[in-house]
Image 1 (tube, one colour):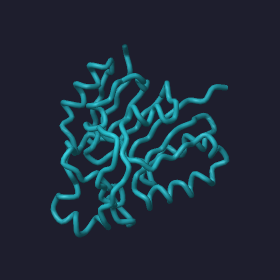
Image 2: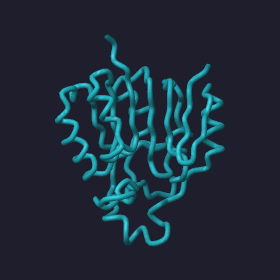
Image 3: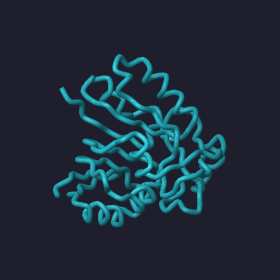
Length: 193
């Protein structure tokens, strides 16, 4: 039986695609640049009897290769746990780090993390096909897709859109053969061409 494949960018350590790995029917790559959350998901993944079907990547995905400043959210209960984000002049979406009192209340520190493009990530792991791509990068989604070559077109995408200009992302996806469906916080896209 052939395994389905996924890529999850902005994994954190909750609401992840780890259940797909645990099913035994999927293989995938999970990307999380925040060290505490990367370590948490790594420990959890190691407990899966299908852990060998999962690759964990600790880089940020962006529009360039190199290093980028990254705000690490506090390891607390609730929504603040999942708002680690790139803090850079190239960041196109809303920067949660600078909103209200988030800097003081929601974040531990800013660190430098390696960043790579989506194309570089796919090349790194020889990914030539994806059934499912999930992206939740707290406002950095446009950066990821603007510079992407679309050499691999996932069959299905789920992308958080609440911190970006969704009309730009919808246009990019439609130009690349996707039918797009919008919900309050996320958009879903199905490859039709």
